[in-house]
Picture 1 (cartoon, helix red, strand yellow):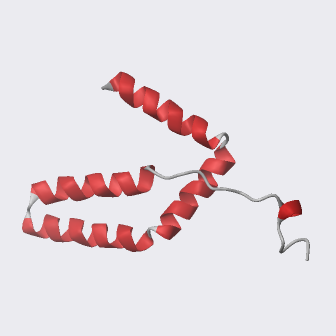
Picture 2 (cartoon, helix red, strand yellow; picture 1 turned 135 degrees about the horizontal axis):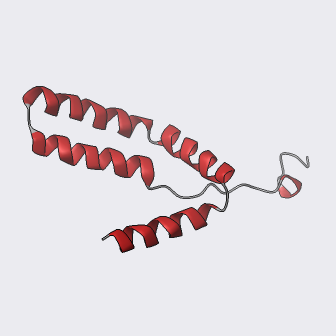
Amino acid sequence: MTKNAYVYATFRINLFGDWLSFSYSFLQNVLAKILSINNIYSSLKLGYELQQWDYIYFDFGRLLRVLTVFDPIELENPEQDWYYNA
């Protein structure tokens, strides 16, 4: 399991290329999925109030997946963009 996690993490890190691209992609992911994160958080609070640990573990896994699995952002070249070259 550790070897598979290492290979997957290395693949994901190499997909972004540099730290700036990773941070842009992370922020875009969080902003795009803010409603999903809010719903999962509400579900986590409800599960904690009802002491339903299976629901808490499931929702924590969902939250972890939403925050960690995202694609790199695609940046356009300003010289080819119609907005900059009107």
